[in-house]
Image (tube, rainbow, N blue to C red; front, side, top):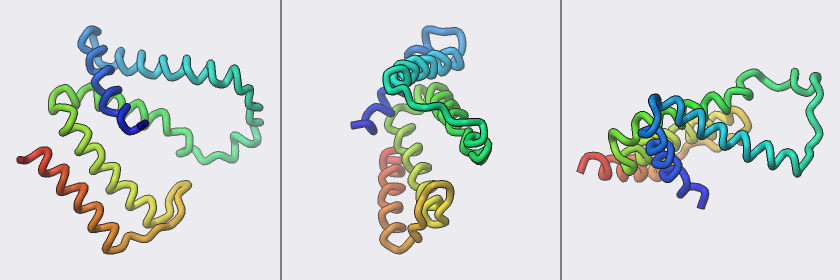
Length: 137
């Protein structure tokens, strides 16, 4: 169900952008909506705040998720309307699969090591083949 929201979010943000003077405004409004929702969630859940010592233990790269999310949303706003939802999503998924395989294979970040094998390569090649059929028919 969550996966179905990606292309819808892309379309919503692209539509919003078409009414504004710059795509970055649509990205800002999109993230502002997220900030509002998470503020409400945090208000009701009331989790304890991490201490400064706990925050210092976190690797710097672990704070870059929002930056990557911003790049994804901004890229979708700029690119998807020009190439279409199916092309955008299929190429996005292809990139996601390739990076996921590398993260799993080397056990990077918070992922357990899952070596790439022939079945994994076969599955990824099916996804890539599907992307090529969608885009180059």
